[in-house]
Each structure stands twice: as structure tokens, then as C-alpha cells.
Image 1 (cartoon, rainbow, N blue to C red):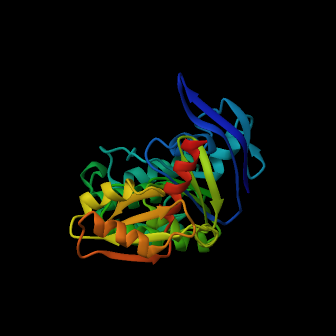
Image 2 (cartoon, one colour):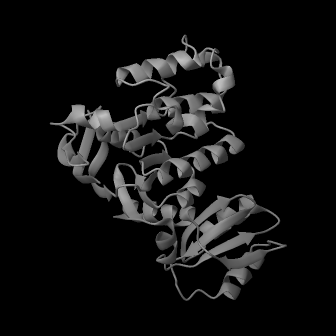
Image 3 (cartoon, rainbow, N blue to C red):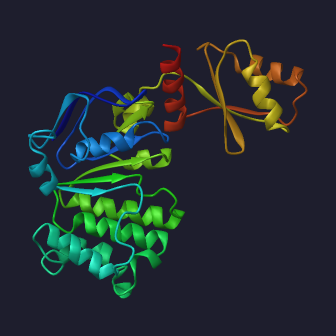
Length: 304
């Protein structure tokens, strides 16, 4: 289990983490969901014992990140957001090097990484710097796993990767979770939140909510409307001018709208849009998504 209590971290005037607390269960696939600059990377570096918190405490399987960092590094696999392997070494040479750092060999732990490595093994003699984005991703994951860690930390592993590689990567994570590895992953992609056991929504160094994706959606008590018209740009402006508007944002070809009045009459909203000369109006209540709830929580923090 990983337990964090009131962790804070600042870089001069910039406070990256603001007294965050959470716990992650053994064998869990836990996601930190938030945009760039939310504090995810700073938090991951603290969990991996690569960065010291300014205050608070954090334990990884009963090891303190400050006092017992050597023990933590032996049981942790860390894959940073930026590709950081040796680009002038081949695929196999990178794996051999990282295995030797932890006193093991590729042969000894081949079965652990087989499902991942088999996809890049035909290119084992290719320089790491010459790999595609998806292949670099798989090599980095293999290197993070080569010493059989108990916990795997992945900082935005699918950023900049094509949709097919993203899907394949999450399928690989499911296989690793089935082996009992605790996985912590961060992502700016809200759809990936649904693939985690639990998620922490994080923004500007604050944790806004921690729960399973299903519970976060189920416990959200505001109505969300999907709205479209012949001119969505003007529609967004007019919705934001509606007297009881709470949120109005673009989501693909439609807008998502939330009203501060829980008893809003949908016909009144339609009449308002017609008075603004909108035509081909589409207006319906929809089930909220993680994105809608995240936006609502962000706005609530700003107000408070």
C-alpha cells in the first residue's frame, strides 16, 4: 500500500503540490487524471524517491520515501514522461544495462516482459533512438519491469502515441495488474480514466476527488445537457450568457451545458436559443462523463 499525507512541493514561487493526501492499495491500477501542470510529475518523482517533498509523509509498502529510498528503488519501476533511455544503445543493450543495474539479467526475467518485448524483439539490434513512438514506449516499459518491481509508476505513458498503440498499451497494463503489480499511471486523457480501478482528479496541485470512475459519475448530482445548432460558435457565446448558466464547453460536434438551477425547464432553454435566432437545435439530457465532472470540480476550486 502507498499512503501519502499532506504532501507539498514548491519550486520557488510555484507551488506544484498543495498538501495532497491519498492511499493506493496493493495490486491496484490507480490513475492520476489532470492536465499539464497539475502536479502529476512532481508527485510521481516523490513516490519514486527521486524528489524530496517540502513537507508531509509518504510511505511505499511501509518504506519512507525520505529515510528508506534505497529500499523503495529496489521495488519500483519508473517510466518518466519523456523518453529517457540511451538512444545510442540498441534495444537489447538498453535492457541488458537496466537488468544489470538491479543485479539480474534479461534471460532471468524474460517471462515477465515477454508479452511486451516480443513485439520489439525482432528489432533488438536497432538503436533506441531510431524506434517509432510506440516501440520506444514498449522498450521503456520493458526496462522499467526487468527487475520484477512490486510497483510500476508510469508518467503519461501514452502522450503523443497513436490511438492503436494507446489501446495496446492499456491491454498490457491489464496483464501486468493480473500478475499482482501495483500500477500508478498519469494521463491527460479523460477516456483512460475509465480503465483504472480508482482515479484521483488533480488540478493545480490539488486533489479534487478520489474514487472509482463509476462512483465519481454515479455520485454527480447535476444534469448535463448536450446541445447543438447550426452555429456552435455563436451557440457557445449565447449559452454562456444564459442567466443561470454554470458551465458551457465544446465537446466534439456538440456543447455540454450545466445549469445552476436543478429545476431548469429544458423548454425554456430551447425558447431562449430560438430567440437568439438559432436553428436546427439539438437539446437533450445526457449522462455526465469524467470530463464534465472534472470541469465542474475545477470551477468549484476556483470559486472557493
